[in-house]
Image (cartoon, rainbow, N blue to C red; front, side, top):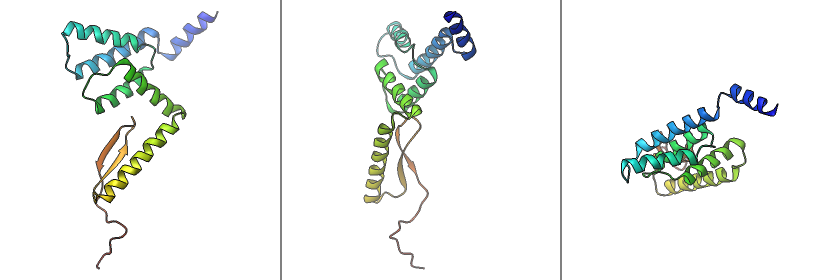
Amino acid sequence: MDRGREIARRSHSGDTSTNKRERIGKIVAELGMRYEPATEKEAFAAKLALLVTDLAELDPGMLERAVQGWVKQNPFMPRASDLRGMVEDIGKMQTGTGLSHIKRMQIIVRECNANLVKWGLLGVEWYLDDSLCLKLRDMPRRRPEWYDDPD
């Protein structure tokens, strides 16, 4: 009886274990295409297959977000533990249990932006993207509060 409920749940959720493994395989394959293999192609393919196995129980949507964040920040191929940590952080963000990490990142952003102002770099600002990556962007030109307009 329980097995029947489990099969029904899977069929309604649309994410069977085979479908999930295929999605993870596609994500890892795309990740592998972004990085130059440091070893022979056969060894690199085996490494990618192991990565798929190591990441098999993760949520494919969160894994995809983690991979996007990784690719933006790192010039080298991630280990399974790297991606697992990023997926865990994304999960904490979604459930609200990782607020302390987010708050620490927001404090870092405020401190970095304060340093930019201190150094006179007023046309740019630091911000956090959806993957909690710290990024720099241009800002519209505006004058500081202490600037007196001669008009």
